[in-house]
Image (cartoon, rainbow, N blue to C red; front, side, top):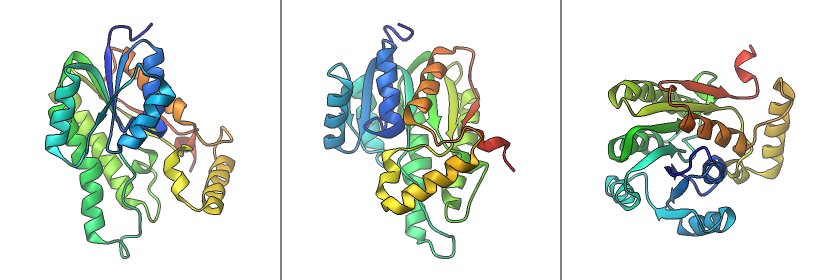
Length: 237
């Protein structure tokens, strides 16, 4: 097993990309911890992956909660940060309080994670960001700004936290439960439209991002990288 004897902590590991990352890390031999705010989702994820996974309830908005979570896990080899959905809305329509809340839930939470994570020397911290950092669209400008900021912070941390390795994965459109909140017709239209534009002819699956997260954990020569997994969106005009 490629991660045999190593400990992996996935923040946001109860669904979507985080859940598949946790599953694949477990399959690679790691002892896996998943953290989430919802105990119900944690229990469902543990039942899905198997009893070998350990769950820790946490709130990324709270310094105390993250400190307690990392104290509970002890020193780990790898941390993967999969943030919640960001603030959506056009700038002239968006509520300022929602902007601040979104910044706290993603950007500040990313800083909290780096601050409190107890990662062994030579281990890794991986942030899941997103392609909107390079391909912003109306209505998701704040999401683009946060993704770009985490990319920048991560590259700086690769130097500041060395020899701990810090990398970013920038997914394109991935079919995750996050999109299930949208009306079915809107969601299907978005997915079909994206699939038609992409060179690969479809949107991504959560496990395809999880596969890269595991590869980053394994590759001890990789740090400060931003890996784009977007079905070829980066080559389109």
